[in-house]
Amino acid sequence: MEGMHEAKSAKTKTSSAKQMLANTPQLTREVSECGPDTDRFVRLLKWLRNGGSLFPKLYLKYIDEDFRAVHTKEAVPTNTEVVYVPLSQIMTTEKAKASDIGRAIKASGYYMNCSHSWLACYLCQEKHASSSYWKPFIDILPDKYYNMPIFFNDHYNKHLKGSYSIEMAATRNKQLRQEYEGIVRACPAFRKYHYLEFVWGRLAVITRIFSLDINGRTTDGLVPMADMLNHHPTRQTTWGYSDRKQGFVMTTTQEVGPDVEIFDSYGRKWQGRYFVNYGFTIDDNYEDNDAVIQGHLSEKDQFYVQKCRYLGGLTSREFQPQAQWGRKAKEMMSYFRTIAATYQELRNHRNFHAPLSIRNEMAALTELEKACQVALAKFPDSLTHDHKLLKANQWEDSNHRNCVIMRAGEKEVLWWFISLARQGRELLSMPYAKHAKNVPSKKDRLMAYYNAVIEPLAKQAYR
Picture 1 (cartoon, rainbow, N blue to C red):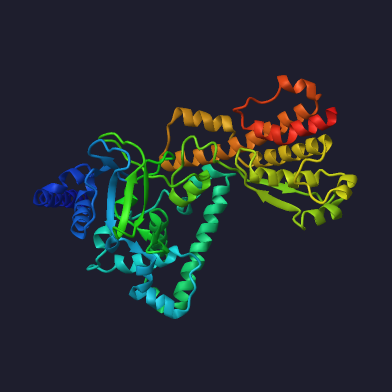
Picture 2: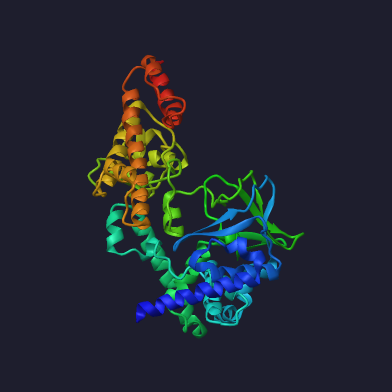
């Protein structure tokens, strides 16, 4: 009977959706490929049209239960306005604060730790209001976020063993719990909403939020339709609020072909932010991936007291650099140079931001490699194993694949620094005259470290 009831319910929804499409033929192309979500999307698009929103060259496409996309109806030239949403249909932080629940929270004196919580609380209120103006928009928001690491159980976390994303997700859970408990402790009006409803609201916000400058004031906003575009590293669109048009405008930055997915870009981020904040990972994110490397000064060090003073008492410190000779890597090497310093070097230098000597740099690189090996040992599987899994491309589900991409990216960064340490020591151990045949290629990211550190030290020794 339960199966018959579900089949009847699905049939009823499909019939309802077809009837709605028949009544609004201009929406047919916009929702013709939205699958089981058709009825909800017809209501959303009708609401948007009636409110003055425009997106004449786009339509929504259903891929599967967890993946929907925005496609073009026709070829779209560069610098074409593809989405317009008036202010009345943008859910802003100011509107959240002015709502009943927003005013109650403000009156309670509670200070939000995260500005996203205002919109999350407003979403909770409006979700329970059957006559809410925002109902067509709220109805298309995901009911669940099982792809978010904050909800992962032991089954998925075992695939992440050794990854910093586990701690990052745990920290996010703790922050969400503290925010919720702070609100309900101060504001009785919010106690009718369950913790998981609040989390649902926060996730809806962080995965869809736009930062906008409206009439000279910076705020956050949820923008229907525009928030349906998926991420791609190469930006195809630019967006912002137009004071002249009194609405959100999204414009193409390049030509987009007909009947293809059109993308927004969330900006360049390290993999952990994509994964923990948005619930997806990026293939080939090598330049922006990072890893946690722990520096540690042993208490048995002969000059422990002096080095402690140089390190500001931070005898253990975490670094999270990308695989490149950038600011974070330089800061990390300064730490390892201090750990590797002799008594004479401690006396003669106020800090260790710049390389001191070939001996010190080689010792610092040895400390770096040890730290990377310690980090790699936390992972039960090798990078080679992960690459084989990615090549086979056979997964339990998308979460499994995301876990492997996440941990593989961290290992690739650790191995890059191990390569830097080994090549660096090799070059520093040979006469400068032999460098020409052994230096990294100009396209190799190790070249930046060679130019900044190895070559100057080798030249100095050569003179």
